[in-house]
Image (tube, rainbow, N blue to C red):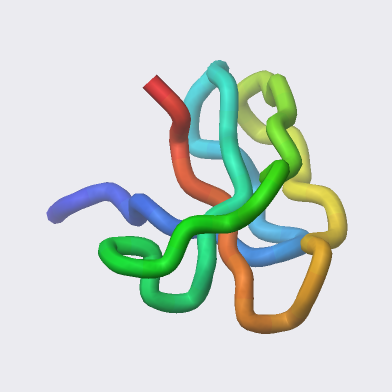
Length: 59
């Protein structure tokens, strides 16, 4: 079974790494000055800038 790739506030990080805030339709809508966070596996994702955004792993 696959791993989730987008996360909401309160979800837990599946892996250590850097995560970035993305727009609702991330494939064509960028976010100006997105939040970037460093999380450890199991850490909770913090609040987003607005309800239509999500967190995504930043490679």
